Length: 463
Image (cartoon, rainbow, N blue to C red; front, top):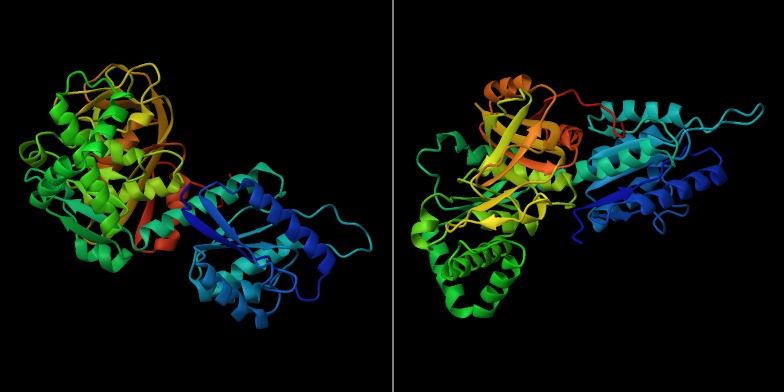
């Protein structure tokens, strides 16, 4: 599985405190982190870098910094073995300019006549020092290493780090031109580059059409294999075989360009050009790309693609995202909304009770499954960027053509008010799972975007 992010684990202790106790603590949380780290997360620690694998002196900082740079760590976890050393915490955080997580294992009840580890006391000193150095950081409440709070908090921080890594230096492949009616999806390419390092790579429809034709002529076996694989999962009876082949060739052309341009996501002009030039729409190709871990937005929506890449990173690649229109309020339930699009959702997310199908023009026809869902959208007006996120539950609802999911939330009127005045549009990215806190936490490290969750989120991880 692709490693989305690498976490550098830097155990911290006070220089004069007991080394035996500190080593016991270090081994406890190193073993726990190795046990619970998701498959998409790589870890590196200070074993072999410092004599005890623990940072406790300012003279050790250069060696630690060089090692973390060599390892290409994307974030730092600085667990405190005891009171710790706030000086090295603050200075290392300022040196590395990476997301930082602070936590300490909960101390046992005091024993008369013996010195306590005072772990909680030390994390309070370290976090103040990070603030003095103007280093943003994440925090897990002082809690047991074997407890649910630490486990959830550590995994959530891995997701936060993945979002930050993807958002900094993201590259979006923009395919074709914006459809003329879609004024709502315009964006400022200069601001994306200057504020976030996000680059947009153009890929014209004319060149795409030539690439598709070349694939049809020269890569017949790959095309036919794709047709067969897709037909095993989806009812393709309404789609002529020549269009099935064109669809697979379009998928291959986009994959090739994503790899060649080292893009993280795609914004596709899927309205008119593809049907005219290739003979099939791009709807289900968007779903195919999503199932391959390549987030893709419809209708040349670059900010939509940025949102989708960030949400995909928050999932650590566990499942694909879907890209939807916000369309219809349920007639009989004020807090349930229809998230729909003409057919681009990934087949892997289909409701188990129905057989996915595809229309003649390339539009998927199926409902998504039930479960917890997160919806998000990064957008901007007059140079101010905000990241909206909200959570609800995918529920059964009336059938609809295209691809769709009914989502029940706590207060739809509050959602609609935020979407209207946010300012946001009708396009959003969605994923199964709960990621609003993770997306909001990532914003503190990105700097140029403000979190805008539908409901308040905790300032500490793990809750």
